[in-house]
Amino acid sequence: MTISDDALRAAQAVNAERLWGRLMRMAEFGARPDGGVDRPCLSAEDQNARAELIGWAEARGYQVSVDRAANLFIRRAGRRDGPAILTGSHMDSQPKGGRFDGIGGVLGGLEALDAISEAGLETDRAIEVVAFTNEEGGRFSPGCTGSMSWSGARDPASFDDLEDENGARYADALNETLSKAPELATRPLGDAPAAYVELHIEQGPVLEEKALQIAAVTGIQGVRWYDVEITGDTAHAGTTPLALRRDAVQAMHRAIAALNALMADPDDVVRFTVGRIEVEPNSPNAVADKARFTIDFRHPDRAVLEQRGNAVEEAVRKAAEPCRAEVRPSLFSDPTHFPEPIVAIIEQAARDLDFSVMRLPSGAFHDALFASQICPTAMIFVPSRNGLSHHPDEYTAPEHMAAGTQVLAATLVDLANGNATV
Ligand SMILES: [Zn+2]
Image (cartoon, rainbow, N blue to C red):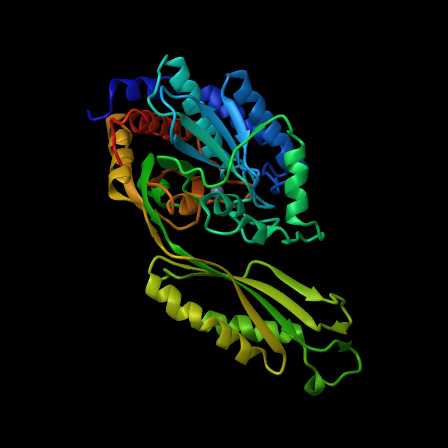
């Protein structure tokens, strides 16, 4: 046994029913008829979910504060001032999202605080739970604007003019959300914690296939995103000969085919997705003069990301001719490797609590990516049924949520007391 007695007591105080009850309560904010969740960031549903979380936190006497990126922090004080140990995740969902992605890490963090309180423990450092704004990027793209603003990865003002599909501005939605809880204490961006540990569902099939309970996450694969805009000429669908057209939809089709060829990978490690398409004028009897689409390209190897990523623009331009194509990179994130000591602490905590555990890299990106740029960071994964995520049927069993939260609580206590150093 390497975890401390305090860490063990905190883990044993985790209340699986309370955690599950809060998860199901949060799933009501943006509930979809199919059982999933649609909770866009900074929407009324998100604002109501935030209010619920603030209520739970304040009822326990934790200090709640918010920064100008609307990241919400819940602090359980330690014996001394100074950087806290931070945990958390995000509360927004994909449009056809589930009940666990993101919110599981926020509520797992809150349950860890409650367990530590109920075990009667004091910690040396404070422990904080964060709910980061807009991790998903489903309403305002790119995602992780909250954690990027907080970590200093991007200038927060650079997100102000992002628009959602109805033309709402990010800055306006942000200010509206902040105005809903004017009583909250404010805190500066860039307040680096001593360490960050994020609990999250795996969003893949590995843990379930191997019948394991916990993954100590070793890092996050790299990501490149692009926005493509193809411009042609609109024309009458019934009268204009095909040879004379500059049809933006046809050009987009050729461009995507060229990208499929560029991204081909017999080992199936490359992840390449065109997830959003917009067409103008979007009329059944008019040739389109505008076609826009997004590219999401991921790989664990930086060299592959660079080689293929750097070839995207030319492949799209060539294939789109005679239409004009503009390719704008919107996100480039290197593959991340979490530091060995903090990964080892999580792995050992899981063993000491008698959970089966493996090490696993993350295929999805997370707020932890940006946290890792300013402090020692790692993640805990729990199983996703059928590997499903970003899907209404996303499901993680109550005992798995509780197991992940127990590992989290133990890890937070030992980090906060300096029993484990990173
Ligand atoms: Zn997530």
